[in-house]
Length: 175
Image 1 (tube, rainbow, N blue to C red):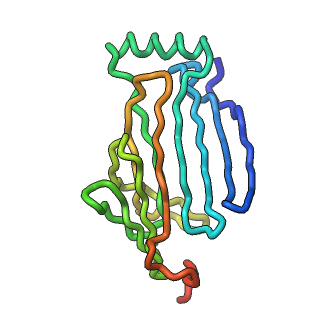
Image 2 (cartoon, one colour; image 1 turned 60 degrees about the vertical axis):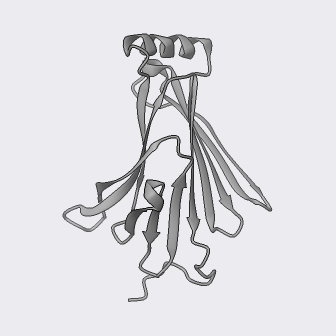
C-alpha cells in the first residue's frame, strides 16, 4: 500500500473547439476503493472552463474496497470535497440563490462559477502563500461537498466569463 497518489493518466488534446485535459490518480484506491478523474475543457476563446470530477471504483478490487467502506459507514458513503482556491484580489460572493459564485477581478472582469447541483456549494476562508511575503494572505475558496454512495460519483462545474464582459478586457495590474 502506498501513501501517495499514483498518477494513472495525464493526456491533453487540442482542436478547434478548445483544449481538453484528462487527469486521474489512484490516491484513494487503497483506502476507499476510489480513483479520481478530472476532465477540463477550455473553450477556444478562453471564456469558459468546464470541469468534471469523477470518483469511481474502476476495478473489481476497488469495488470490493468501496463496498467494505459502505458497510463500515452503514451505507452513508464517502464524503468528499473539491476545493477551488481563489487569489486574494478576487472578490467572491455566493449568487443566484446559492447555486453560483460571482467572481469580480481587479480589472473589472466578472466570472461566474456554477455546478451541476449535485454537491453542496459554499464559500469558505483560505490562505494564499506568496513568495516574498512573511505571512499568508487571507483569501477565499469555493467548496463543493458531496457523498459517494455508488461505484461512480460525478460533479460537473463551469467557470465562465460573464456575458456582458467585453473580450478586450484582461486581468492586468494597471496600477
